Image 1 (spheres, protein in one colour):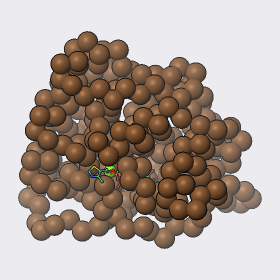
Image 2: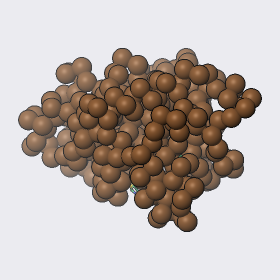
Image 3: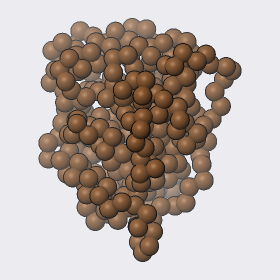
Length: 293
Ligand SMILES: Nc1ncnc2c1ncn2[C@@H]1O[C@H](COP(=O)(O)OP(=O)(O)O)[C@@H](O)[C@H]1O
Ligand SMILES: Cc1ncsc1CCOP(=O)(O)O
Ligand SMILES: [Mg+2]
């Protein structure tokens, strides 16, 4: 759910000339190696996600090379969850009956030493939602990915600071300090999406500068990239910060390539998924824009 207004962001073109000097060269091969691995290993990713996002999340994972399973019943978790290589939990259309399944699946993944990723959609929208998100943060997500307003709401609540008024729209850079605090308090990698995506473990901060503003005009692109993060982290659970930044950059490069063919949000949705499916090494290496802050 987007609470950040579209920020001015130049149309992204391939890295060329002097500009590529700003971007450390190791990120391109890191992202390409993870995407290649994903296509080869096709990890099973369990998604307990909202009704709005189920389709685009499953299609994003499939196009990238992963194997999605949208299984959310508490009754199936003991049998099914141990088979998954990663879990994605998304609270977008939360109701009380879903919370036990989310907690139980996350606890099982932690017990099995496997990664799980939380998308705290609209975390500050209600007390019920915020408390559910806090309870899930307590189950130690490997990664938490939200937009600026969501990370600020969750960070304040996790530090016991009461929320005053209604959150306004926030850019990802506005949420940087909140993201660092949340990462330190939770032990999770925290990613804030926006015109620039920032990823932190509480100390180190990296920023991914790919993407196009039109991605905000497609519902559930945030949910889709969170699921892609789960797939990337499944491949290299011991380097979740690198996997998270790579997933964000890869998804946004697919958005840039898709935008070249799109007429608006509906065709961007289609072309983004096609571009993710067809993304090759040369296009990826020439477009990855990740920096250490
Ligand atoms: N202004 C922007 N310019 C480029 N990419 C963007 C912009 N806003 C969002 N994105 C990208 O769109 C995707 C969804 O992010 P966002 O809209 O922040 O999430 P949410 O849908 O959860 O609010 C992310 O991959 C992010 O990088
Ligand atoms: C519109 C909406 N309402 C409840 S969940 C949802 C989708 C949110 O997706 P995203 O956070 O990726 O914009
Ligand atoms: Mg969202």
